[in-house]
Length: 267
Image 1 (cartoon, rainbow, N blue to C red):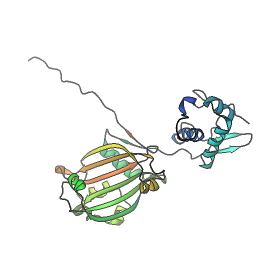
Image 2 (image 1 turned 90 degrees about the vertical axis):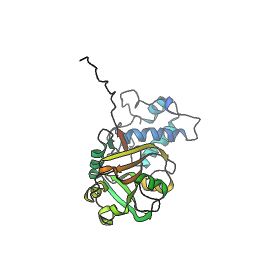
Image 3 (image 1 turned 90 degrees about the horizontal axis):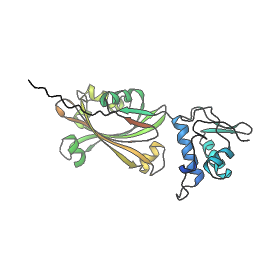
Image 4 (image 1 turned 135 degrees about the vertical axis):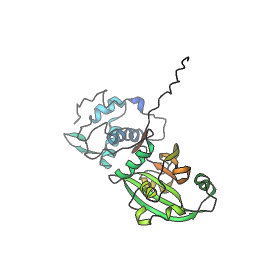
């Protein structure tokens, strides 16, 4: 039985313009992806009843069978539950928490993130620095660095895969056990290498198989890629980090302002 639930902006704000029949992705899966994103972001709240199959089919100009397959996929992922006579209801806990960081005060934002999220240490070992890493850490190629791979989670859901390189003399001041349980920025602070400056680059990347498995996404999925050099007092680089983030679970926020020109006065 179709629901007559009315949503702001029409039927969930959906329209046929959001679908593309020329893509290799089937229409039912395109509908699934659109609805999944709105459920995970909280735009469609837990407990809400979705419009019925016929109503969605009319809004999207597709067959009812196509809509049914999309809703069944959502149910298979436990994002919704389907009930005869009651319709399709968004499941509790379907919303995925979003981690937000800020450019406005990057150092404080990184520290807060380290305290509010969990980390799983996947690997840690000493290796010789390759030229690219050595250049960013202002050391010689071949000098020893600690190579560490960590997976950061929020409420048990992975959102970032992090690979870090720290000069060996600094890494020697904390243990592997501490690395597995304590934010790295805290360890650097204890090692007299507190970060006072950060320089970073942001881009896009496709998920490689190993990273995709860790982040629970498909190989080739789009990820946010961040590379960052952190420096201590006197400008010494103390860490180079390369992070891959799930864009549906991580967001950067910043505000820019036009710099005001000083007003000149005549003396």
